[in-house]
Image 1 (tube, rainbow, N blue to C red):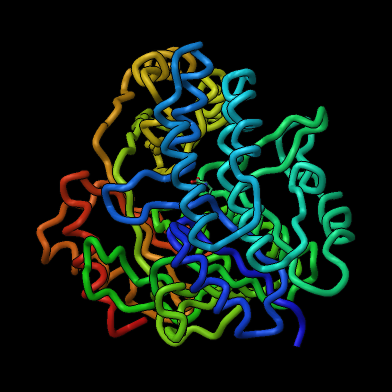
Image 2: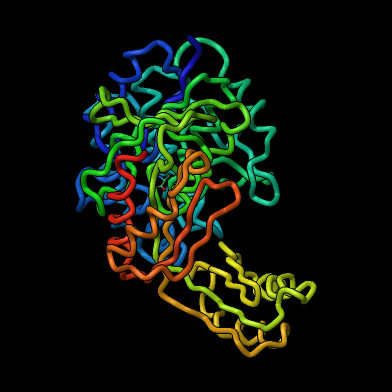
Length: 436
Ligand code: ASP
């Protein structure tokens, strides 16, 4: 069997005991060879994540103020881990170096990355593994995207015997400065390492038993998903299912390396397997939803006869530098759904600009929408999926504000009032629990 890349999340590495458990997991299979650690996460719900403290340290230091408080907490956390693992490593010297640079950069990336860097050093020492510095071998291009040269350059560093530790979450820009991935981005590093090392499997060790068919905060007994494709997962993660960072899919997509979500605290649980393709049993694989959307509704008689109408609407959004998510259309109507975060306070300005450019007075903006994705590859082999979904919502007395089914027939998107979000997810889950 070939090699396995294992990424361990922050809660899997929150303290020395967790790290000991992780070592046991790694050593229990000789195929586990490439290790990608996150920074230590929360030890309990009231605890602080190291990465959050590092952002705070940067902000305070960058303002030129006294940042001794976050520095002290970070020193204590790492010193405790080092001493409880009885390691012979001068962690304070490393932290002194970080303290010197705490506020000097224009962005927080260097500081934010130090949690993974320090934890990587500790774990490499504890495992007797080779430490691989991401700043040298994970490269971004000028536009801030991963440079695909990375796969070869990093791959060369991952040759040879023994274990390798590559800290998650960061790499470097062409000028050598540190750049981090988005939050939760150690998952992305894991996928890059899996591809660069030609691993046959990417194990993503976290603190849950894999993906559930719906958010367990809304549906406490939601079923575990045994198998899901990259594409299905991306649709669900994009709508708020947060177990794995949605950008982690890209590095492994082409080569088809499966991702296995596993629970560090329950390694015997089968978890969720994310694969390139699968044969679905039922139509629905999962349901995920998020609030915080607005919808711009545009009406114009004979809209369908007018050439370039859609282009005019989208050019307004482009000029305001706003990305849109969905665009359900009718004969004389068109709606554009946008995340509130993206819209900011530009909503009314955009409405006015569309009115002017498209010569129509009927443009209104509806706020407070939630979008729910019901996702499953099997949808196009089954009849009556949308009917079952809509009748479940009708029975739950939910008003569907908008509905959109992509032509791939893999995702039915519905928009509801934010206040109906949880009720809707529960109703859809109950309707499809036995048909998944
Ligand atoms: N430590 C980083 C964060 O908190 C990256 C990660 O854990 O994946 O976002």
